[in-house]
Length: 165
Image (tube, rainbow, N blue to C red):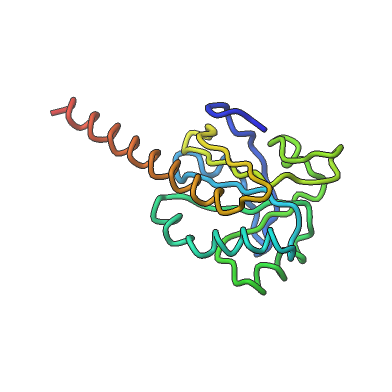
């Protein structure tokens, strides 16, 4: 896995909704949650996706965008997202390039780790969750990190305004 406070590698991937997502387009705009997961339609991955879907309004209210990533096809992702009504995008990384760059692939690139990265508006990694079985910990960690990032941002804004008085 990558390290906290290291730069998040840029990438561009096709989303299940036909759009493309480029991480650098979010710089200065939104926090980004990238969650890497092994396979669509499996018990654990469905549970994780549903957990994030249940909290999407809170994620958005914390000024973040959520993207799920694995190596399955855009069409497979579309079916998965439609069946479970996921209100967030799933990205296809067919050659595991992004998974590799984020150290989310293992077993010689044959499998994907269940790892979640929280990236700030300057494209720096500020949080990492890696629990293969304790899936609910991903959301809890994401929430803690996003709340802290928002509080830090509010404090920086307040301090700038206070010094400019």
